[in-house]
Amino acid sequence: GQQLNQSPQSMFIQEGEDVSMNCTSSSIFNTWLWYKQDPGEGPVLLIALYKAGELTSNGRLTAQFGITRKDSFLNISASIPSDVGIYFCAGQFGDSGYALNFGKGTSLLVTP
Amino acid sequence: NAGVTQTPKFQVLKTGQSMTLQCAQDMNHEYMSWYRQDPGMGLRLIHYSVGAGITDQGEVPNGYNVSRSTTEDFPLRLLSAAPSQTSVYFCASSWDSANNEQFFGPGTRLTVL
Image (cartoon, rainbow over all chains, first blue to last red; front, side):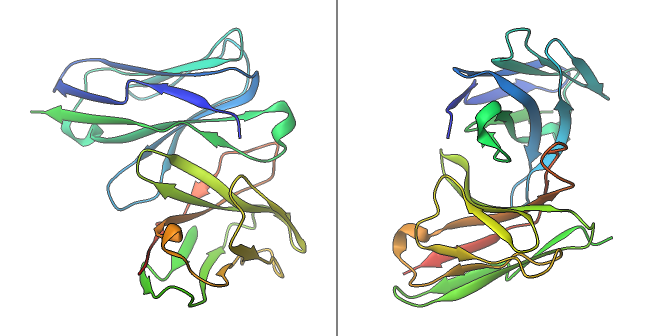
């Protein structure tokens, strides 16, 4: 599958700080999705993006579908301890049919 | 709705053994898929199905078989387990390919000795 470059690989922040992570691809994507995975659980969908330039919020989370359709970012404002987990970007590109390609994840640690 | 369910939650196999990982969803989703998750590798697609009776290969299909006899169920079969198949396996489903907001099950942690 197409390689998604997700960064940073890990983040260690204090409660109350804002967080930003992003994904880039060499291919144009039709869809960008952001998931969070808690230890021992399956990924849970946070935000779905379907249009270039689209900016969508879900509570303290905001994500954008890049204008070039090759990147996306996720911001978390005023982080809290329960934000701890692994965040994955996933994308669907034109010739992939139904397949989602996943980034390798950003591990977020939040200290009180 | 129970959502996406997977059984078993944990499994240990010996090399060469076969087994089936079960996946079921009660949301009447057309699209179902299997992923494996390995440290530092993210999630990789094994097989997927766009509807009952239709399956196709993903990125890493070797060593795995699937079938989709009903909309609800999508079992994953390991024909002859190998240590390289030690992984966490996730099943996911979505309405269809246009709405690819996939919902994931809780996972099966498989160890092959």
